[in-house]
Amino acid sequence: MHLTRLLIRDFRNLAAVDLTPHARFNVLAGDNGQGKTNLLEALYWLATLRPLRAARLRELVRWGADGTSVSARVRADGLEHRLEVRVSDGDRAALREGKSARAAEYFGALAVVVFTPEDVGLVGASPQARRGFLDRAVFNTRPVHLGDVNDYRRALDSRNTLLRQGASAAVVEAYETTLAGAGGRVMRSRASYVERFAPVFASAFRGIVGDDIEAEVRYRPSVEDPSTLATLWASDRERDRQRGFTQQGPHADDLELKLLGRSARAYASQGQRRALVLALKIAEIRVLTETAGLTPVLLLDDVSSELDAVRNERLFEFLHGFPGQVFITTTDAAWLRLERDVRTFSVAAGQVIPAAGSD
Image (cartoon, rainbow, N blue to C red; front, side):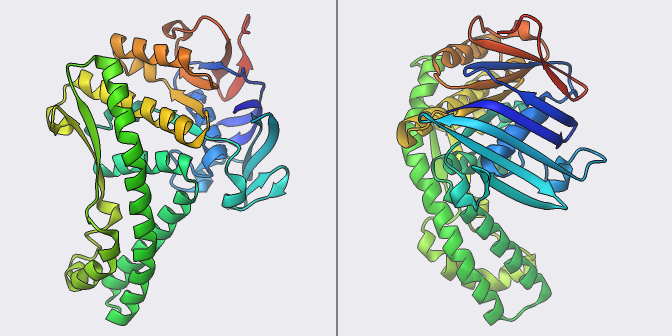
């Protein structure tokens, strides 16, 4: 799959963008703060219907504008699809082939994998960051996972609010039933994904650093058996009421990374952490390609400046063998190891134009 045209209106600092991307490499070059990452975020929003960084949809709308829209023509499996997502008066609308579409109808034409500078710190980050990575990866192979995660978060917020308000046990229990259903689905999807992902990740890591160091990834749920969630919350209800929040559940899960059987978070060097994160991303792409039959569009945000020379070389070795479309941002295109099938765009003050002499 690849984008053949991209239109952006009033998205963050991007007033009007009309691009015809290359089917392989698209370099977005410019100084910091000019809009390069905003373009990647627009693509991510178009593919997932979720903002990459914003907490509220209003934050996506350019200052002074009433709304925003991102649309694209996407070629997948020999067919061309039209996707659009927009915000108007604070409400989001998604369209596929020009018609309003629910999430289940919308997804399938475009999948993206994003790699940001923040991802380089994933090994030492909070469990919340690693859960976010895991849920994004699961979503790409199983789009309904997004709805399960959102249902769980809404029910969790409701339970926490009821506990703080002193609601009766019967009222809280009603929310726990909904919470347990969504939570169970989230946990099972995560566990199933990591079972497929783990050997691919281990192989990718060996390809980056050699056979001397073994790496492994494990899903660490805070509750071992999803079927016990409702019973657990019932027994914890009074303690959670005193705390003011729900302590256990899928919102406390983690993705554990190990080197030679030891915690990577505690013992991995900076170079090893970078290698682990690069292996995570490569494995995510391979699992999506092998299990779902999809070649995603890659969104790489200035990651060359975050990786050391060895890891950067491994990244570009992978990219040259990757058959899909890539969008990559940089402050200096000379840092990138790309020699063919490249279209470069200059980004300045929210304007995106093809660079002189670009393919």
